Length: 209
Ligand SMILES: Cc1cc2nc3c(=O)[nH]c(=O)nc-3n(C[C@H](O)[C@H](O)[C@H](O)COP(=O)(O)O)c2cc1C
Image (cartoon, rainbow, N blue to C red; front, side, top):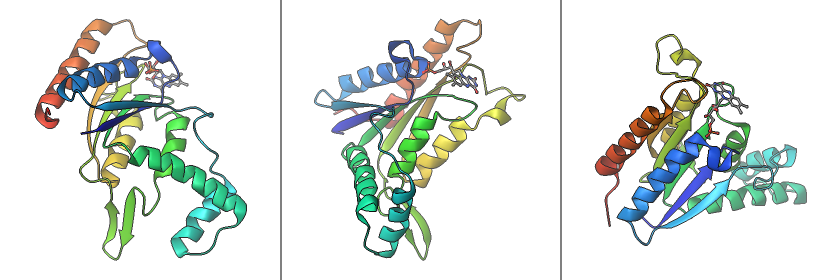
């Protein structure tokens, strides 16, 4: 393990619950890998290029080997720069707040930039194949409510989507959820539970150097 990329989808900085647990995970893993490089990517309009009509045309054209127009090339190369930054890491940490029962739009934007055939996944006669095999992603979720109850589980489109996206692209994912952050419950108890889950995930799935 050489480099962690911490992808931050919460704009709440130090007050972010998802980021709090990610910081704990990163601190612990740095203890296991003293030479580990940690890079942060805060997702916001300044860090993500536009992927509009030229980008979409470029996506289909490059798959078919058709030359790109200048505006298509520009958007495609900008998306590729984001992908190359992602590819340069071998381990990932995602800080993910629930927004309207799903992931924040900037994280979806990021996913739409990098999830391209030949980059994160391959396509062949046999179907789709994840190209990120051997890489691990720690997903630190936070939600105002609790979606582990029978009556609310069906409202959660955040965790199933992220689990699927990781698996589709070949990554193994591990997760914790800092839940009920908008409710008056014992938040320290939930945080302690998340940290215990992190300790367990690290013990069982991440080897020390
Ligand atoms: C735009 C927006 C939409 C939200 N939608 C939901 C939601 O659908 N369900 C929920 O339980 N909490 C929702 N919340 C609350 C957040 O999930 C909660 O505050 C969480 O702790 C945020 O994570 P963070 O502290 O890492 O930013 C929403 C918050 C924002 C800002």
